[in-house]
Image (cartoon, rainbow, N blue to C red):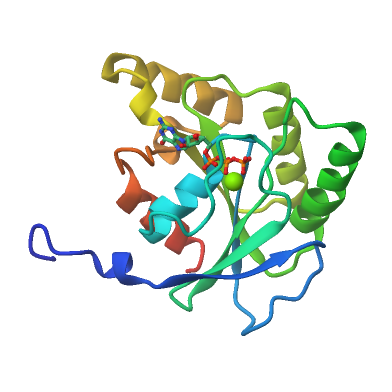
Length: 203
Ligand code: GTP
Ligand code: MG
């Protein structure tokens, strides 16, 4: 066991930006490694969670305006895998063309990418899964990908409400409450549990 306060060895996995993939079959320049995607509703906190996972403040760009991440942004993580920041769905201002482009990119990637080893599915702890979330869940079920449900923005609910929120969302997703990782990019809650669970995709 590490001494109290010592950095976890996993916290030392280096991470860097590699490329933005404009197409779902785009080859990543570099070694072939398993890919782990981070996906969810626009503004749910995907880029922030990626930064939390790798322990860097601003590797993936965090945006105040939803819908800023348009391509599949690829990052390394300690030479173990690639982390892929997936553009969000459910962006209210998106036009028909935006939606069609999103579908071609993200559905193509989730359905057909053979190097995709697992997907971190982000949901905001404050909200019940939306119709878009449930539609995305059906796409995931088709492919039978290993999924890690992660609740974001836990700092926004009180301790007393939290257990109920986790139970409600887990029920909609059809999983047990203890299969869901609760996180906050603001307080760094859940960082270590998130790392453990993501690395388990690679075992
Ligand atoms: P798009 O790429 O635009 O779809 O957004 P995203 O899902 O990557 O979300 P992003 O990480 O850009 O965060 C969106 C907003 O939520 C930003 O204002 C973040 O600061 C905020 N945010 C992200 N994570 C947390 C969190 O854990 N707690 C709180 N309070 N705010 C958060
Ligand atoms: Mg983003």
